[in-house]
Figure 1 (cartoon, rainbow, N blue to C red):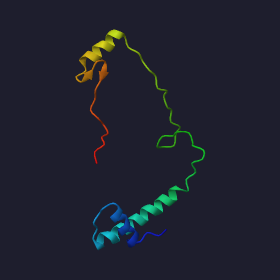
Figure 2 (spheres, helix red, strand yellow):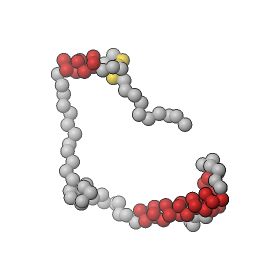
Figure 3 (cartoon, rainbow, N blue to C red):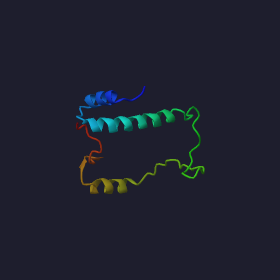
Length: 100
């Protein structure tokens, strides 16, 4: 589907954006470029994932996660020193919120 100014205006209405005629021309072009790039991404073979590599193409070694236990005394010291807690549960600031 070719992106047109009409399609861009429709997308803007769906997103509740008010765009000028100049912005419609600009964004129609930019959206067209994005869609062209996305269509190229569909050509990438993803059926059989390759081994991890670093940015230079060298195989990247991945370490296995390990759980290290501490003594009950160390655990109690850490819990007691934590500023926000409810019993033995530690309370931290939210990372994600549901604000709209």
